[in-house]
Image (cartoon, rainbow, N blue to C red; front, side):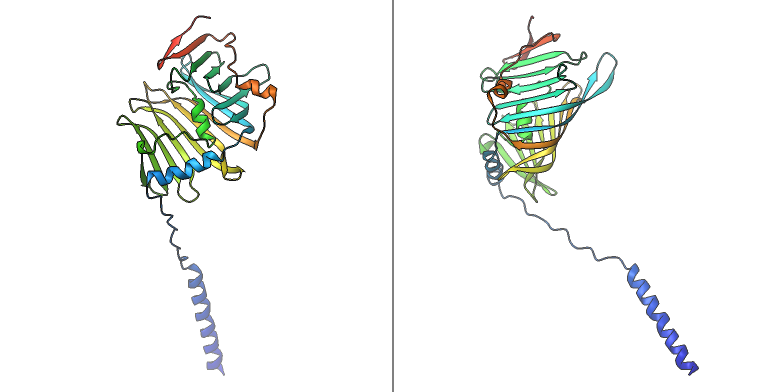
Length: 289
């Protein structure tokens, strides 16, 4: 009986040891699912174009963090603002970042004819504007209305022949060239085929701007808008970021605009801003008040 009791205890101990080691064994790692990319730039662009065609007029509200460089004090400054965005494809957009109704540190907009940007912080105090027909780009503008349009899911791709496709990790990357110079890169997550970031370059291939996009919401059938948008504008002389705007949109919804709201798509007067710059043939020319 003693031997039998001893043997039972020994078996029990072995069982406990086996269970302990079994519990400490590393979990079997399941292989990460590899999502194949598109086979051509045309195939990738067709998905993005279809999404753009689903774009609707929208109204978005949220918070905005504006960061910019103060050359006088040689340091970066931050302003936290309430933000409202109205977008009416294909060309009308309006963004207003304000602290109070009377003080609007930033206003960005465009319509069929013109584009404009007002920045009232005293370290900047500048009004930029131009006519699309005279200059089909807003290069050099701190925040480009077309960049915001694309961040909100309405892309202007142009001819398929100007694009090439490559695969980088989990992303398809579309690269656009103009006269042999890379001017744009679109990074698309292959899992949901939503855009993670868009890189912009100037006519000399230098960093111009970056849009980082995440937390997408489906606003209407087939139309997705990121609730988190960060746009960085680079200083082309130093290569450093000179301004960034981070948008955290709390509400995004389709909207038909009334007559009063439609007036927001008209270029406002410059008011008492210190500098007025007009885009003439790709150059920013200072104008008198």
